[in-house]
Image 1 (cartoon, each protein chain N blue to C red):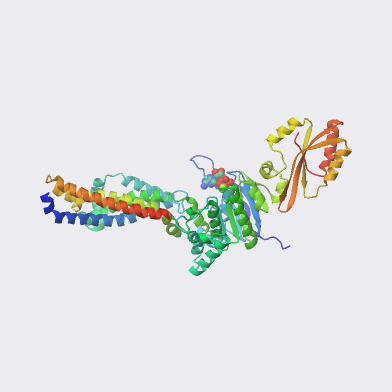
Image 2: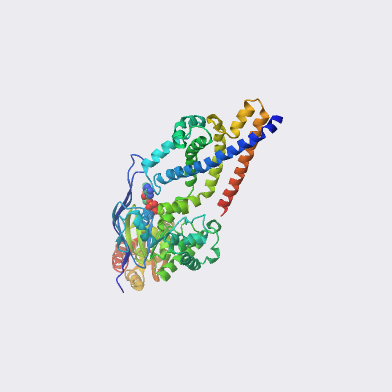
Length: 219
Length: 348
Ligand SMILES: Nc1ncnc2c1ncn2[C@@H]1O[C@H](COP(=O)(O)OP(=O)(O)O)[C@@H](O)[C@H]1O
Ligand SMILES: [Mg+2]
């Protein structure tokens, strides 16, 4: 317990880093997921921009990337991170890699959410002359808003999960903190403190997500 | 009367869907259909499920693209028009749907205003037009409600307001009342009738329910397996259907024709010959028909009958059980004479 109090500055710094990593990956991964999901949805057979080759390639990509355990993906994607962010280690490298993995995971969720929009509504929009871009922004996304918010809430937990292994590539965060000061130093109290904070964080976001989704559904 | 001007003209149009399963057969949903809808018509298209009605109506606003043939809308062939150039065409064609297809994320007012947004109308114009349309369909008090707070009939009225927001000359209705109860159906049909009369909108209504045609339509086409098998003025098709499929539809709403079950009872009760006579308008002199029977010594008993009124004209059927001391030959002789006066169907 005493050691935990002594570690408080590191603890809060780690918490800040987790928020930093999760915040940026939620933004980039969320955006990437939206694009991948829209791509999958719009190019599938019978959809407004149906395009079999694009759909098949995109679908294959998602199916290949998604099942790779993140820790292995992290190692495999390191050269790519080096190319894009300039470095293969540290928080920014891990933000890149998590965002990439999350784009594919979230892409599938977004696709499923968009599929809940009844095709008839899109047909109604087409019948008054709306083009694809307008349909995306005035029909698809607003109509699927409730499920989409829940999908993003869901992926948030996955992001926290993925961020925990940042320590392996020289990043920080609560996962790294628990490993370094709790596990390696045989101090379970420190580990539990990190766990507790993560639980609180996830609960808060889940609560916020549910609340927003309920508002979106109720309209 | 001025010559009718066609607003929609299909010329030998076909629509073939690729096989739904690998190695399966193509689906010929529309098979060489030609159809002319004149300005001011309420054109009903009836047929059983799978006959191709929805496909046909969706070809008119190019939601579905034809495989071959010409589709003229206000004289312009839209069949090969690229998607981008269809926008102005679609603004001139409203459409309503069986499932209403309202945007659940928007209020009633925003739904009605949606086509005007697509048409890039300024906000003030939009607001005024939305108010006008909601007033027309009697839903001004629901402007701020969301679709899931409305009943089915109210949703369809919003659908109608939305479809007419851009003042289209043509309205397509695909099974627009099929999800509604009978009473609400009639409210909506009345409203569509007003749309036709007050705004002069040409309406194409798709349905599998003959009473929708009877209430609303002025012309009708009967579809079966992707083809139009019969067409004409509603009165003509109702009073004198030429095709067995048309006759089946007609029999679902026409009073005076015994059903198969009723016929069996009649046959059991009357062992002699039974015939059904059709009377259209007052073109058939009933007194003369009955006079023929009397003169030939054939006695008859009216065993079934009824009169229908369609678009202010009436027609009816009488089913007679015949007996004659002179036997079948004298009955045959009198029926030959009656056939020159009206349509005779021998039911046994
Ligand atoms: N997208 C499609 N792909 C393949 N077949 C279709 C498609 N849409 C309709 N069909 C087929 O075309 C025929 C006509 O369908 P439809 O126009 O919906 O009939 P209706 O509206 O009269 O019930 C049916 O056999 C149906 O299965
Ligand atoms: Mg249909």
